[in-house]
Length: 120
Image (cartoon, rainbow, N blue to C red; front, side, top):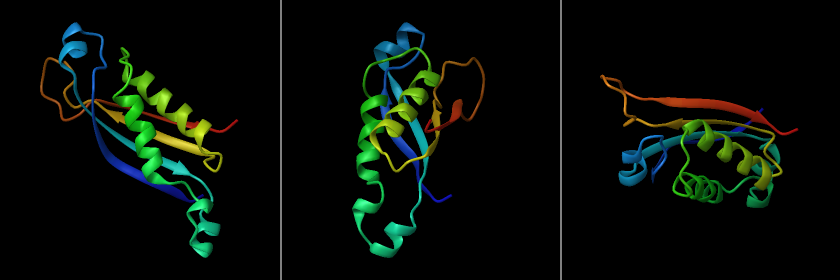
């Protein structure tokens, strides 16, 4: 299956279980792979035959920069649900939400969750 991939989208949000995360906020990165048939778009050169990644970016930004939640698992679920709801051409999505400044007592490069959801 073909896919549209958006990697390293950067947003500022207020997600986390600690009061300091809700007050100060932090940077989150999101990677998304949208699986859909792209042959028609490639042959027709028509935007209507694919998914507009600028719109996808905006939808993801609205979730990450929107209502705070405790878990990045919840952020990822909301992203996956919104993309599958808003874009009929997308049959499956893989989402990774990175929280590189997670309050972990030690050195680490990244904390992230990844999930895959399919259209039912």
